[in-house]
Image (cartoon, rainbow, N blue to C red):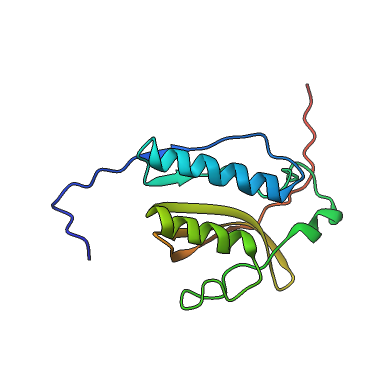
Length: 143
């Protein structure tokens, strides 16, 4: 258990960039911004954009988007006991840089789909947060 009486300096950085339909390009850009935030900005908690691996699709429900879902970590003992190159890559980056990375991804778990966040601290898997409302229903607004 950490010593709560000694203060710890925490620097948080949020990254933002235009996400494309190319996971390869998106991952390269996210990684470069995370590296920049860590090395030049001194950030030790770095937040990439939500669902940055592919173009953001959550405004409307479309069954074609379910094919974008990937498996999540299976347990805290075997966090990458799944086929998810995005999580593997950013877990390794978290370990390399010694930073916390919450990685948002579209998850398929059984028959359910989630807008999930897997959190890595210095490469160690801390857990997952699942939002179950995405992709959501279309919302009409009167103007």
